[in-house]
Length: 89
Image (cartoon, rainbow, N blue to C red; front, side, top):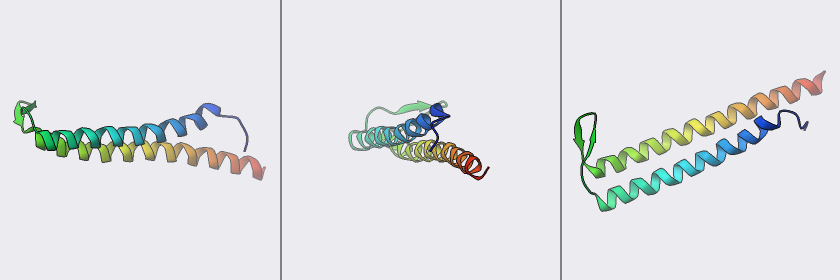
């Protein structure tokens, strides 16, 4: 595997790490809000119960994880295509 495009190769690992970190932090935060409850949170002028915000954290965790993992895989796909094209020529 050629060592060019080192920044992109490192960014694949960074995005994967961030995806797992975001998932863990959001799930832990969501569980804390669901279990402990708390004061209602004002979102767009409406009072949302803290437990509902905890559930929304789970949704956000999935979205962040999916987006960051997808970004990582797309960068890796581009690098793999580039490596295969260089091998063929």
